[in-house]
Length: 508
Image 1 (tube, rainbow, N blue to C red):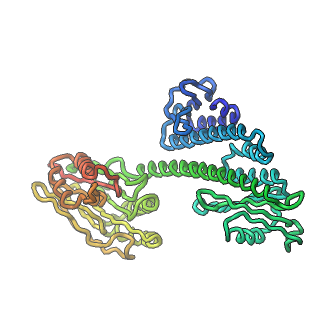
Image 2: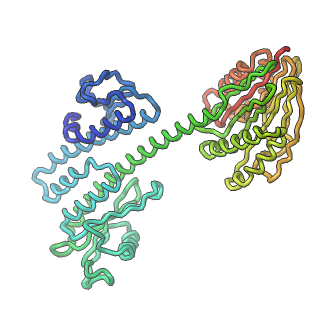
Image 3: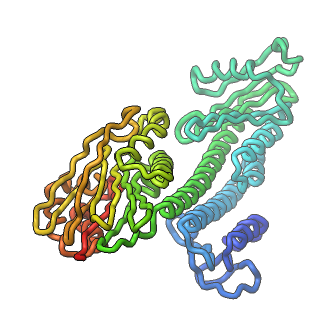
């Protein structure tokens, strides 16, 4: 069967193959069992696949699409969608063959329907599908004109296709659609005189509702039967055409949805790579201070961020933030907030942490207000000579300070998050980070992580854990924090973005 599909759709397979080659693939091939049916280019350097998508019919594997030289999530989804397209071709071909056998000695209108299926079975674009259905319905019923309307709000579709042209004004069509929708049954209208404003084109009208995804999303209409009025056989044949057309529309919508999903996934992958590149690869190297930072978004992109700006005399300013919400909206505001904070950190005249927060809040307040979101932010400035850390906290938690040999304690925020009020009231505070002292600035994705019993990791568990890890390097403290949260949440997906910045004083 795959050989037949290949022969009938050679051009379509070639288009798929060359699109892969343009993306950088080394080869694209179609297989039946372990037998190669065809490949592009004709003499590839290698056919060892990096991606394989099975072609299944009734849950039975009947072949494979293989790609050599590419292996990305977007490529896997694209190849999977194409394998399902080929499977649909096989299914349609088998259905055509089965129907061809059943059509022997049946009525002429069923033969006409088979012809309709032949010309539309491989059409996957929704507009092209509608165009074919309007044209072939008009031809098979022998009407002067045909049209098909589709309204699918969840897909953003509101389409009309007329053949050979629009014979009735929209207001007339909508009037009779209202009549049809009262019963959701086929509607037939005959007129002894022309409809006003239609230039005598309306003698008879037939409307057939089309069930797509269990709901009447489409209507097939035919205008003016050439040799008289629409009769019962015409209604029955048009209903059969409409049922088949509804299946074709559903297939086209499904295929388009898969294509849109693939594009969206590719765009989200790109956004994730860009967001990762925005985060520093390392914290500044400062004498007497061991530092490390890491972040894990809950979805492909997230709202957590950290940044560090090196200044004179090995001093540096860093910020950790958490945008309310998750996903793409949080990621966009994350990039804006990070950029504004950095710009206010690198001014000619140095600004203290509380000033950085207040200035940035004023610049971002309108943007946050428009989308009803906010950002918790912790800003710190470290001076290596005095080993002092000046910091300000706008609603951010948890921030944990552990003096060497002491007990871990939470450093509470003293102002609201950025974006809540036009003026932020954060104030500057001071810490001295001596050898063995540890400061952990994290996001609430850690302490609010939940296990299978819906129990939160919590502040107390976090404080005790940091005490247990205090003797380890900053990088190991960060890694062990993530590992402990993962073990606690085993069996449950990550609910929120998780970020950790660790500063640890080293002996002089």
